[in-house]
Image (cartoon, rainbow, N blue to C red; front, side, top):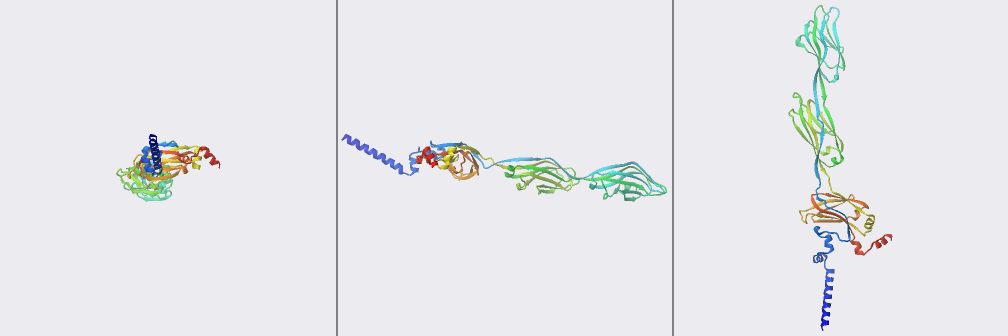
Length: 411
């Protein structure tokens, strides 16, 4: 009787164990994970805080990117040399004679002739003959380049004598003479020509070079300069253009003003950029000229990992999966949205998730040898880990050894 009772208990335990085994095989996976929290599925695919690789996986990359942001802003300043820009009259004098005596003669005209040179005759706006009169009797004549330009009696009140500038050349000749007569004439001291010459530096150009990176990441542009007025009598209009696009057109008042011009980035290009300053009149010095470029500098995390030849062949044949997994610092919450693009060897995949992790099979993006992963965030978030690993679970499910796989390849 005692042996029969022990046999019945053993049979009952066996039936109970068989029941539990059948129950665990047919119960839903999520329920089984709750009953067996140490299962391999939970440890390798569960919450990001508990994620570990099991023995059938090989880690290719495991890094901690930390906080990632869409871009970083920085300002680059392109300094421009000071500019002297003007359109002004320069006064000068040309000495002809210290003392000039022209006596009247009954038979001939008494004269003196002089030559003088001009650096830029086209810019001469005023010409006059100046002298001190010691004696004056009769009519005084002046010829300029063989053209009679003055014929009249002269007193101290009529000096200086204004002369026309229409027939001036770079090399010129002036003749001073008196009419024939019985007595008298002219005695003159310190005979000079006075010139008013327009000196122009109305257009000043500067070249600014932008790299392709600076142009592609350009967000805002400011041109700054400080105005110093050197002539209070004349105030002119300044036109500033960038690559023939006018960005400023206004009067420069003599008040020592700091100008800041907002410029559209579309007006700049990669390579050389021509900035021109054009003035109609006045005399100015432009100092502290700066072109400030605000850039959104791309500075995204980039990582490398290697794929061996046999691993690449296993991936091609479907015996291995290459998996990328991101673990985020934020727990699953609607406010903790993570948006980014992941570039694997220049092929992209995107995610927009509130989960605490993201995982994707990247087998189709893998190259033999060196591989590059780049994380391009669309908003700011923190990444605890970025992992790339080879998953051999498919081999276990079909119970294929490497010899079996090699045999299958040969087929």
